[in-house]
Length: 460
Ligand code: ATP
Image (tube, rainbow, N blue to C red; front, top):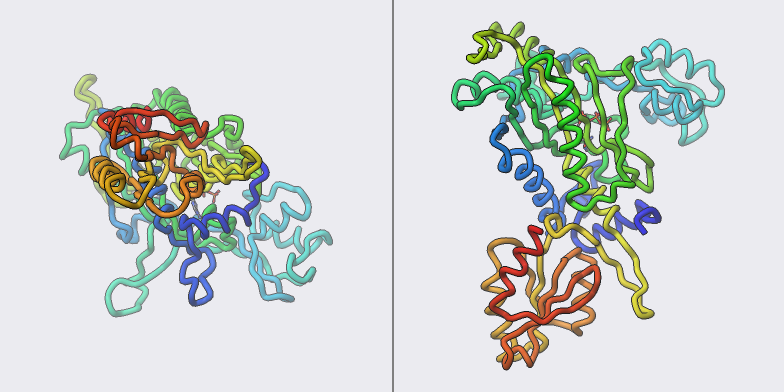
């Protein structure tokens, strides 16, 4: 069952089946960077597609955007990132290692260190004998200092301070700075949303847990602009929508929960934030997605810093206001890890063991495999023709080598929900066998009906 899956098992599985590789592995790898292999890239694309379909294509009140990663540096002053997007860093003088000070304190003492000042943390680390360097047990630490997580680089050939730019640490700001553009060029009316997916970068002090926390990752964020006063209702609405997205794609609801951020710990921009958490077997309840009421903070900041008027004119009431914003912010890498863990099973079937990924068909990297029972004609010709008819809508895999049982097992591991087998009888009765990954039941259906049947099963 999923709760016994260890991180080592998932990492090894992901490599063996071509889901995720360590980046630059032939050079010894680089910490916190991962590459998505042939199955992984399909799966991550499916997650992003499902998010986009649900939030953009299925709705009339949300439009999409794809903003640049490198933005004007003033954006990050307005948003507060330059001043406050920090983690508390502490360096051990005995091992030379650097740690998140809040994590060291929390792990050693159980105290809640989030939101403490650097001075307070420095004092606690010096005075509390339980806090030790996890590597060598040392108790000699440099003073705690805030460390800004934004990656800095330079535009142009001159590495001078006026050319400093940042790799965006979140996709949200690209949406806020385009609020006016979208309003003026599309006939949108509040309430409406702007959705975006793309890479974000954070120089995390302690990345880890595989693709859960990396320094380069993807985000899927939507800013939903609403009239002030209606924000609390919309917040509840989006919490429900986002919860249902996970469960409709097969995540076991017992492994999901809501986490309400305590008022005193909210980010500077938030009125209320609720996370959707997943119970990862190797780290317990952890954030998959944060759903925040960002108020009018960002638009007001950008209006002030840019000098542009970012108010909305409501024609119905003939009034102007700066909208409030509800933001569901998720990450497809982290979500993919949750889907993998939730779907991974090792089962005993008729005395044989099988590994199976019980992924929802929409998330599965390959939707169906086509197997000719024999490599030879005419069975192979019929199978090949079927494959040609099915491909194009989604990834279909053709496999004519090895015993049929082994071919099934390989697809079970890859999460392929359906296998279609062409056998000798198919030549006569024009029917094929379609096998279900989870029940392993087989059904004979006309070749001519396969395409529609798969369509129904996948979108089901
Ligand atoms: P955490 O507390 O785990 O660092 P956060 O609260 O800083 O996360 P947000 O700023 O709310 O994260 O970002 C929204 C989403 O982006 C997160 O829910 C997560 O799915 C994803 N995300 C954030 N940081 C990372 C990271 N370093 N690696 C992978 N995904 C990330």
